Image 1: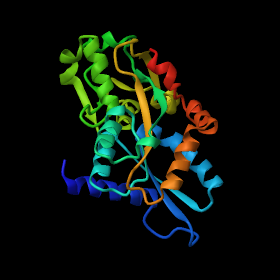
Image 2: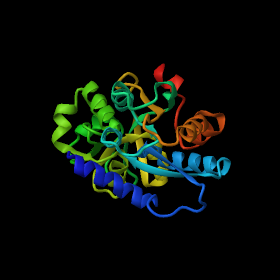
Image 3: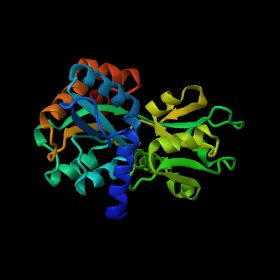
Image 4: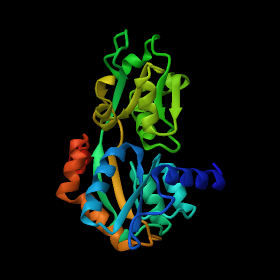
Length: 264
């Protein structure tokens, strides 16, 4: 993965979010939040709350796989707040002094679930059913850059079916792409987060949650990036996300208590 590709991808994401161009109000400050794609709806809602409380601020989001977002920050992308879907990416940035240590907190937690298209014609009732001959394609995030893919690999390895299923795996750029493949019926099954399944509504069916102890807790850390040009605003955004109001938004989208998840 080249430096040019990473920065081009980052710039494209910002253009898509409307970050390039003029913003209303001469005194308006832009706050750029890079977040795991599974947090898209939740962070956008928190961002709207933040803007209402901070009319001088414009929140711009860059969503993607946590590993890709980490690499963008390492290459100097102008990010103010980072939220990853696993501690590893935040750990890597912290080890390089790229986040403000005192701002790092655990934002929320999630769970890994097995899903299938809602109109699938054969019976799929458990993870072990992925071994059935009817299941020819299974979508998961690429474990190299997508935390959901790492967790999926841990689950399938724990169940001793990873090696058998590996040839059938369709590796995606992020967890939402895996969800889309299932919704479209392009795969027979997928491993995603519980919140992703909830966001799809009746378009997918949750077959089962990952067995207890089959993967590391799905924890989302949040922190202010050390190079932020608006550190006070960035800290205020983190505070809002961690507040009762922010946590209520996350719960409404199906996210879980980080304390309960680490106790599993």
